[in-house]
Image 1 (cartoon, one colour):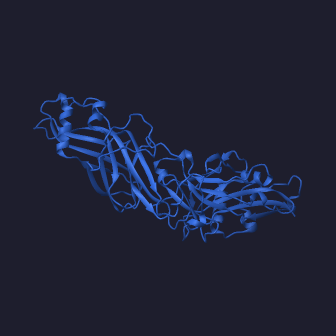
Image 2 (cartoon, rainbow, N blue to C red):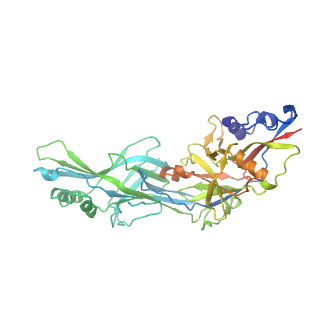
Image 3 (spheres, helix red, strand yellow):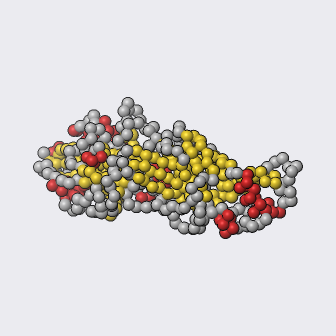
Length: 439
């Protein structure tokens, strides 16, 4: 039934009784006291909805994510998002010092591809720098953390990132002089544990050397990720052997967003609100770029109920992304959630969903696959919440629309969406309610 309402809400081709036949909710409101033939239902979708862009103040842990992100995404709406990765090089047991006649071949940094975001047809230049100090083992690193690294890259390589669902490994060969020096320390046992390893390899910083809108992910959890040393057991041996020193036991991604020159550049502090009219009748949502949407129903408490009003059948908030095509390299979040907020734009509590209020108001991104023009939406059933306000049992508080806290990861943090306000010609936000009253 939710899909039926979603379809009718998108296409706007049914109204009145035909629309109401698709609605979920309780069609039997009042039947215990009134003959059902004396009931009528009424759809109202003209309730005022105000929207604002506000700052997303919350940080999140990136040290536990299996990916490291590198790259950038810049647009005129939210600014320039940059991603940098930092990782340690871990020690691994080996038998180099036990072999006689062992010969060094090469030292290669192997980085399996995890995923990409943005225009994957553009060349991407990955730069690897040496950290000036080792990371702290076991530390909790967040998206705002950073580490100091050498300005000149140790090694760099350009390649074309792959599309969704594809995998491959990027291999970056380090200089033979550097490899030979490392090899000698291993053979002599000067490097023999994590402490001595981190004293020699303080770790790496991964940065982007291009200006195209691409963000690339390294899979630190792969058994193919690491600094691999290739060698031969002796001059006669034709088969190469290797030992892999893993990267990513201690690692994190730094995300920074510079809104200078964008539509939201005036937002500096958490209590600020930027009306949708100031940003092209759109508001922003994105964890990585640091923005949420604030929603208000300023006149809902004064809503004039029809004569012989009996109850609320259904209340749905329909949120429409401003998006033209599905394959635009900037997918919206898979889910959004509603929270009650205060004057500081903090998340105070979840908004109850459905008629029972037994779950939280979370909606998934949906679209109609067979339409000539993209029809997409997030639909929130907030019947309990709106019903309590209409009855005077709840305060009409502002809401925050953002990515659910339980789903935040580096991958979801990259996704952002602009949603239309009530004045936009298309992709408008709507609060639609269905009332039951007597004749």
